[in-house]
Amino acid sequence: WEKLSHVSVKGAEYDSRERQPHPRRLEGSWVDLTNCVHALLDDQEKNRLIWLHGAAGVGKSAVAFNVAERMKDLRTRKETINEKRLAGSFVFSRKHTKRSTTGYFFATLAYQLASTYPSIRSDTRGCIQSNPSLLDPDKSLRDQMDALFLQPLRMLRFRLNGCLPLVFVVDALHECTSKAELADLISLLAQVLHKPDLPVIHILLTSNSQTHIREA
Image (tube, rainbow, N blue to C red; front, side, top):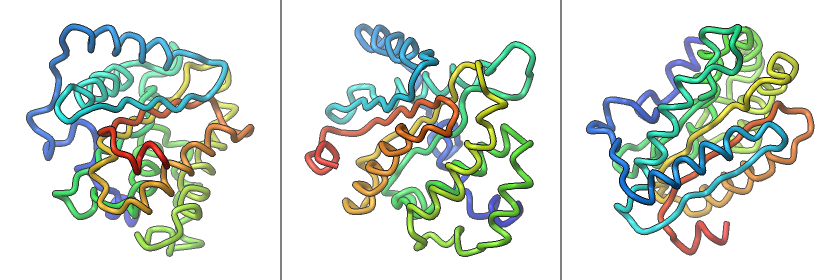
């Protein structure tokens, strides 16, 4: 667990101090759009990949921040106190080495997920102990996803049955400096939505409208 904590990029969380001042303000149509996103995130029937894209500075990160903030305050069910709907967040940034690559993406989400759901922590720790290379940023992204992301989610499937869906917020995809890495990540996240053995989850992505992202 200590190794995962060390590898996890704390500055990648949506509300980290690295991102201050946080992009909170929403106006006009962005308020309506945020409400629409919230409605989609309450869908308990099927997984969703929601992509917000547009020109730089129009308010995408503000929407992502507000969505993450709300999900962090919402419980998956009334009986629980600490199990929140925000399962993880990652904000890419080309200014920060570990946030400009996908190599730390799944390790960071795994740490956040296990922090919110301690019941999966021992299994996550055991997985890493049996294969320490999973924390290597050069490890296959698919291998990292399978072991650090999908397997923990599978362990939560029955626990979250009938609960409101978990939400992952991934902001500023265009800040990833490798187009190939980013295309691989987007493809893998899209595949997650078709996994039948997972709890219902929703993934919110934001980015600029760049060709290589649209074609991923």
